[in-house]
Length: 200
Image (cartoon, rainbow, N blue to C red; front, side, top):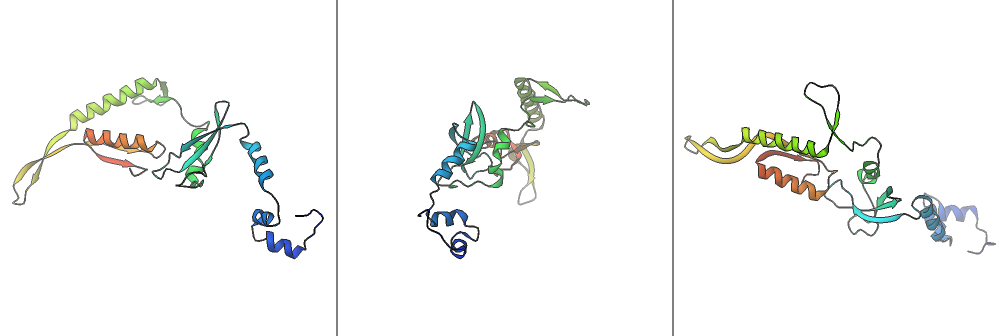
């Protein structure tokens, strides 16, 4: 558009009004390339973009994680994704807070029975404690057979291979592959009560 060319107020409102300012600017002949280039330098200039997947559910929306100096500085939708085309749900859009949050616990904490305070313990020790408790509970409560009544009302033994004393609760902030393996492990142990926020 010629810099000396003028447009009336009515023409401007017709082209740019109704919340379509950028579309109107393009219609008036303005290029958005300088605006895009400037916007990139504001937030993620000189950052390395790493493609990834949102961890929250089984949809698999693609994300771009901007890393600078070894730190995540931004997470946004990846417009190259055929699944989400750059859009993210509110949880996915807030995944930056999941990764970079001063309130996020990064150490294993343990509160002794009857204790009032949490103490920090090594992760290996915490994993061993969990494994020991799972094995002990399963050994004490595992039922290979359970008594049921057949069609004639006679009590028979039916193979069950389960424990009703362990409940598994998974979360959608773990990736889909981990949730799948976790569910397989629980089923292999004979756990019946398996729930997952991601519904895997």
